[in-house]
Length: 80
Image (cartoon, rainbow, N blue to C red):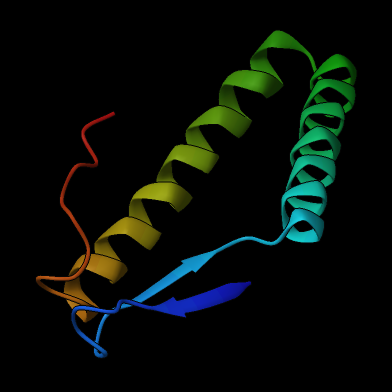
């Protein structure tokens, strides 16, 4: 991460990934795509449906916890 303070207001800090951070992010995303593909190829259609429902429940739980614990910070744009 690189941090840079805004010249107009020292309270404002801009953050961005370094080149190494962008590379690591790309590698991590690629790993996840390969992992999801490999796991989904091992599952039956019924198992995929069950896993998808469980993952949605987990996503919803995390979202609700974030909304409860960080009101006004976390956006309620979770409409998927």
